[in-house]
Length: 387
Ligand code: TGC
Ligand code: FAD
Image 1: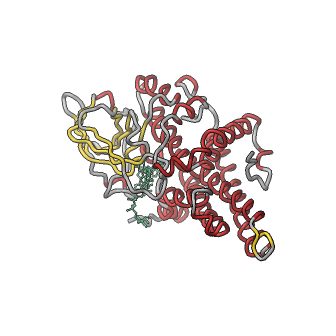
Image 2: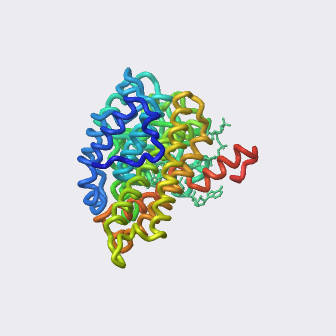
Image 3: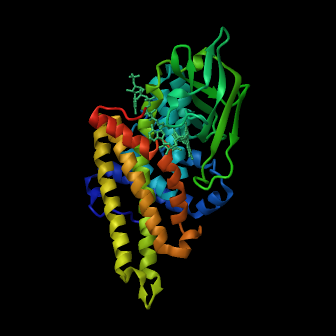
């Protein structure tokens, strides 16, 4: 049984409820996900049945209140759950991030009472799946330049355009779509059966293979007026959803790093070269010490960020710092772990190469490393370096 990495006894700072959730998600990943992940990766599929399992465990929309079908737990619990899911695979955490932070959160925060009452309980149980369409082929880091348009007509909103790189895109029953109207950017709920809406899988991925990534297109796609999210006004609305997901990623990245560290340590202790375990060589020890130190620092960042989120004190640039640092460090840790496993580190008999390749996407999505650098830079200097 996997016991986690907790060099600074951070678990002792957690409540009993927080530890319980962490342990149960860890066990779920160990027993119900890890034995099959190599197959999902090889086939490049996200196992749809996971949706109901994650829902039954309360892992979809962790912070959504009980009156809308969520478990109404804290941000720290949410973070711990994401850490444990990503120890399995970034694709598993991505599924839960998108459903909870990018679909349920905007409906909860910006939706009408009818939208909340209909969608949130179904999404929380995993009976319905959602996706979030912000990025376009020509507008990634700069979503404000989006070309997708929504025109208000007597019959409803008419959507035209396309979205690229959309997680859960072909699995989704409903897409949260961001489009420009004559009054600026607005959010819409588009059900999969709407005429003129199509989702196509993006093939040939080397990264996040056990995740559904799609292109969405809208051709004169008519949706009722009541499918608009009434409270979502301007670019700040989708950006506020990203804060939620980026927070989960900061924790998740440490989960992937913990998996790589654990595997590299075990391998180093058992692999013999020159009549010694390779863990006896100083260079291997240096690599392991650096991994453990960065994991511990990342965990401390997450722990304090979680407490700040729970107290309502975390701003978006605080989240950017944890996402930026933790994903960067997780990627370095995965590379270092892969080097310890050497040739064995390139096969799917071990986890490190899968995590390494996944983390290349995690480094890019939800704001690239560079974009988070500039978000923090802008906050501390007061000068925007984006344009
Ligand atoms: P800018 O003028 O700076 O901002 C527009 C308005 O938004 C406000 N704002 C925020 N509000 C809440 N949270 C944030 N993080 C915010 N950042 C900015 C800002 O105050 C302003 O408000 P107002 O009232 O003055 O209008 O906008 P900009 O066009 O200059 O762009 C800023 C920039 C580059 C930081 C932003 O656009 C950005 O973050 N770009 C990165 C795009 C990104 O992260 N895309 C993610 C797509 S979703 C995804 O990747 C899902 S992967 C999921 C998975 O599988 O796990
Ligand atoms: P670009 O914006 O073209 O950036 C290219 C390079 O230029 C990067 O290195 C970037 O850092 C740099 N750059 C750009 N602007 C600046 C600047 N001002 N200053 C300095 N450097 C700059 N999007 C969604 O909406 N929903 C999803 O569910 C979703 N899921 C995804 C899943 C996967 C597997 C992947 C890979 C992406 C996903 N995305 C999703 C899209 C993701 O958010 C974008 O890829 C990301 O925001 C970057 O956009 P881009 O790839 O177009 O890169």
